[in-house]
Image 1: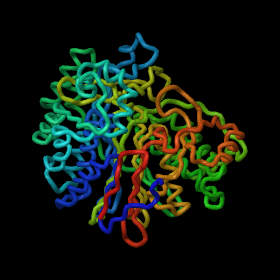
Image 2: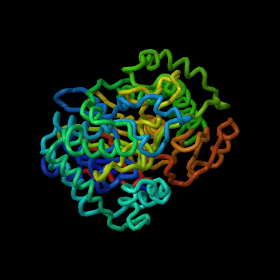
Image 3: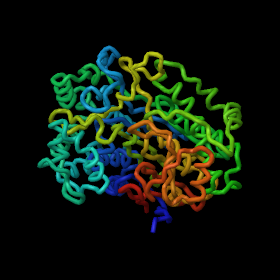
Image 4: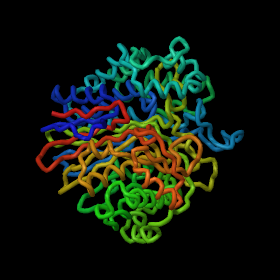
Length: 528
């Protein structure tokens, strides 16, 4: 039976896609740390125990709320392309390679984000919050069924780089689920971070080893790219939905597409249409496809191109988009690529501090390249740049790419009410919209909202497709009606990995914290 009952805490709640990471966050709270300490501990632990999804060679985005500030702040922890990353460097290619050293075009931004969030708001020492991650890297942890399955699927990628194969294919084989998985080099790197902080990563011995490896193997990142990297605190985008203030990260995040879809859906009475009906699924899919049309045209690093957010997020524009929707047929639209391997988590503590964050190395196991003897898998986020100079997301030096990562937070009366997000590339705004409307329009608790059958339209990663994938638990008559309306329906598993791993926290009317962890993941919701 699929779990429908949430975890409930009277004071705290931690949700993440791996139970050991959730436990690491809970340990920080038990030690007297706050939500920010716990969030960094969860993030670091995920970088160890969920290496196929995330790692310190990747990026992260954070939404934070601190009661004394009475506002939500965002931190953009995404990296920029190197100064040598010019389109001419790929003159021999039709597109940037998806795997390998040439796909590792952007500086990893996650360690900088840890430093910024912890230094600004943390209570415990940086070494303390990294302690669980160091322990699991050095002493090992039970390899999850999810990591095993992804390792089998990506075995050729892992075998292509000797440094990667040595870690992830010990003895030339995929480790068995439940076996002890040790990452000695990564443990050493994390210890360097615990002692030297962010500078060890961007200016010290870790940066030096990554750059040495890059130079010897034809990579495009250099020492100055690392030394000059800084993330930044940003003001979240906010849009209203049925009395709530919904916050998303601004570009280069795709967060605005989720707000656009909600603006469209607010014009319809979802509760009257009914959850799980043809009308419910069709309407959500169409609203999101319309938002993707603008996202794909405009989204990139706003330092390089103006993005008309005021127009895109206006209620008037939402009305014009809503008028395009036909309830009896679908709108044709190209499905463009987006990565899917990501980890979302959230923490709320007894003082009302709240953190909603998400991190990624883009594809499963990122570029597939481990940087020298650091144990760090480098992300392949830069492979999403276009080589077409007419496209908004074209490759240019020192530029942030179109980014799929989008943590969310909704406020009620100025205080955090819902924290939610998901893994899943282009599926992120889709799954977010599904679980949000389930909680807001249909009164579901967080666990039920993430456990109910889901769908995803288009390509998450892999070959382009305009398929509408439906989990097999969706009513067959509904699937037939969607196909009759022109959707390219494909039925997938009952709890299919293509749907992503979604998690959510809700501050309920009794003053308690409800947590939901996706049954499609290895996660847990822990509260007390």
